[in-house]
Image (cartoon, rainbow, N blue to C red; front, side):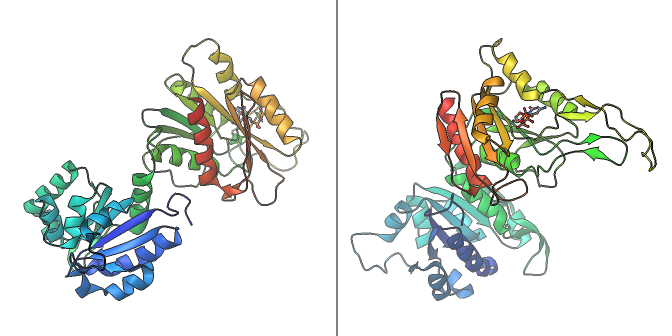
Length: 402
Ligand code: CTP
């Protein structure tokens, strides 16, 4: 279940290409994400996959004809386009694309698209030669001019045996585009920097001081902010997570590298979110060769790292248009009091506190249980939520303050 797709009404328009069979899986996946799916099909699409299959998978009547209606008042080509949040055309064949590019309405699918005001996502799929033909290229360019989003086909082996572009795009790419299309662009024009992950403080070429942060919360914040239209820079400590689409990633290792990267971009930002678990200390001395067993002095002298967020808070009073500062506090004891103290001490606008002792939430998991405190004294206690949803709630709180 995705809270972003939950109860969203998706109108899936299928035209007649071999990739039509894949839309059966897409319909299931959309319903598993909580979306309400209605299917419309061209006549040739019904030769590749039956309306019965899609009716069973979508749980809704499948629309195939402009005139087969029970209710004369509700012309399907008007009603279908009006009653949905998004139209997804997949596969869109060369013929359907040509029809749409020229405003033809001689079948239900193209008539619905012409009459609709909802966002339209088009997934072309066809033979590679047809796809590269100037006629198709021009038609696709025209669809983009009309404001439709065209998700390019993937490259690879095609059903006809050829290699090249023309394969229906991968579901995960399409799913992300659907979410982006229905997500309000309420952070458009904002520049947001997010720090994420742990830092590594090397002791010798083998050993280091670090912590259990996975980076998941910071990466979720960067992805969510980007989806809501912000320009996002993520300064990330070592993490194995794939960087979110459209986010500029600056990879760092140590706290001092993170400090330098953040300082470089800080003044240009509207918001800085410090989700990274920055090591407070580093070994005072770096041994260029591996420390061997049997050393006599086993104590480990440490030097304090810069407190990046505190420094940003200090600088805030000097500048009029300082970025909004958001901190995180991972606490195992007195978490609210500690969070409140850090909010004031570091001169933050907002702090997200998590109780790291809670068994159902924490570093490597996909869920988090967060309490948000802002500088006006507002407290928002969240239930256990996915890190993605926590990210959106934190962004909502940021938006209220911006
Ligand atoms: N932080 C930072 N630089 C540091 C340490 C922490 O910018 N050297 C930021 C973290 O990214 C987080 C916030 O400060 O947003 C609070 O971090 P936390 O580790 O909870 O608190 P500390 O200030 O380090 O205090 P303590 O470790 O004593 O709890």
